[in-house]
Image 1: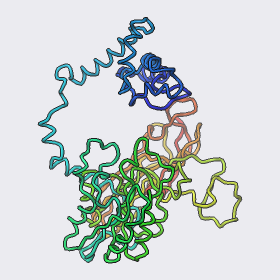
Image 2: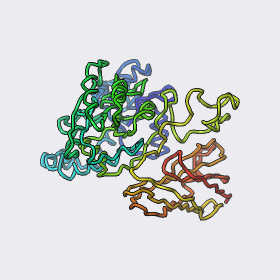
Image 3: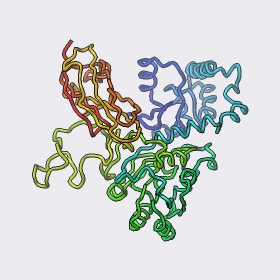
Image 4: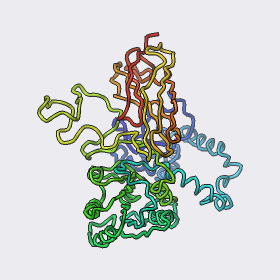
Length: 498
């Protein structure tokens, strides 16, 4: 599929260099290329095509075989061919690629091959598929904070207040781009908690709306919180606040949700925040004030059951963050595998005025993320032994074997994602401070120790060098092992020349 963006001033849909030279000649791709939604006609908006007819000609010549929803090919290609302005051989090549794709898909034998009302009836929302949705949803939840072991909830919790604009919200559980996900089906957080909270009184208050700054619902929510032993706050972004065309300049909690949380916090009741989003949010106030925080993303059909399963400890959370959460939006873009500058900032803990200010740092917040890439807590604790290497120096083709002992030091069973990162200290192009190369997810019984072994190969140590060839360079490396990208133990090793 050709992208919406342009490269060097030429939209991807009409870019001869990327589609003919790179895609077809250098990469050898022989299949069909489809435009993204209407992005052939959008080349007029780019200022690259004067009208839709020229856009159709430019896109087809560049190698875009299918016009998705723009109708430029349908309207203008026949006349361009009849008038002699377009080489019919180019058109025939595109038609051939499209027909070949349909042939490989079996559509000439049966044009309705992938359409079956019987299959639809048997598979959509089947028992097996809902079980898979439940399992995937609870495995996706990331425990960000659990101060004082507020979680998991126990039978001693007799009164629960479920509060927030996402607490009893079915449609937004489906997430963005869920056009055909019927909004009446998802299990809400409220429904899931009521199902799991056997013997407990569960009350609900919306608290506020997602698209309004009105505080008129605050009073009811505060009253519900005051009458509860624990408050579950279901907050975050709606489905359409995420995904394509849904950028936000402020990535805090939308609307008055943070104000609502602050009012509930004043009651002094323990609060658990279920934060739904499709991106990293700025959660600094919550991190400082709320004892338990779970990143619940958009969990889909079984959202409420999955969240309740984690809240009550039926499933011990083991999810890890696939991105870093910032302390402030001003830190963005923020990612773990950044490259050093010439003026590295060595520490986020120095006393003010204790060093020169001319460093790559922020003056008002630490450089580090609030929650780093790969981060995620559990209801148990894992301790890491010192990593071990089979060799301190390897040749270009030798593997490096890294071993580490990991122990479940807690009293409940749990899973841990053990992560291995490397750093190439000097290269013909500057290298990132760390790169995730391996990870393993393992289940541990209470008190159990397992030895985890990773094997790094030449491929793992290779990169695109200055001359644009892919391979290794001899030199010094670091290998880092831990439960996230921040909390790692480091060992050096050397890659010798061949």
